[in-house]
Length: 200
Image 1 (cartoon, rainbow, N blue to C red):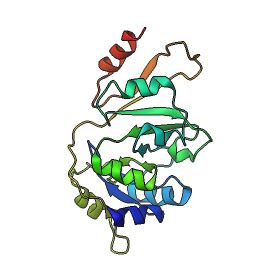
Image 2 (cartoon, rainbow, N blue to C red; image 1 turned 30 degrees about the vertical axis):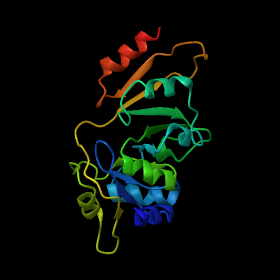
Image 3 (spheres, one colour; image 1 turned 135 degrees about the vertical axis):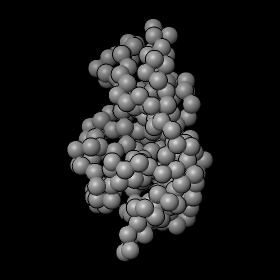
Image 4 (cartoon, one colour; image 1 turned 120 degrees about the horizontal axis):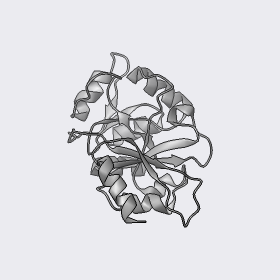
């Protein structure tokens, strides 16, 4: 863990476990994102999400409406990723003004993020390749002879990714905005929409 924390705080990429797949993490600055996108061979027009230890940690980076805390409390930890408005515009590879944030549930991920702050949470694999479930193996696959990737040990559960949702920020605080499921994952679209209708 400490080696991974040190590497992340130095701006390097690391691999860490989540409840679904190993994540490739870096601090959200330009140089670190350059390294991450090169490792994943990912296009700059495909933003990556941020992982946080808890919703309070996210408040430093994004605006968190009451609805966000309500829906996070209604579904299993780590099962939802929320598209939230950035407090100040961020790197376009994080989404610019709208940033996807996932509150992690894996104990090792939470412990890591409490020490590093928010890290990217994209899957730890080259774009287009099938992700593995063991963090050590994922780090080895991404490492080169001159660039060894640090990792936090753990085997992930695999399966579907988190469900990505958003809503319209133009609604007033007393209104119930329509929730949109941008990517269906562990939580089905029907479950999300059912939760939304139950509040009206």
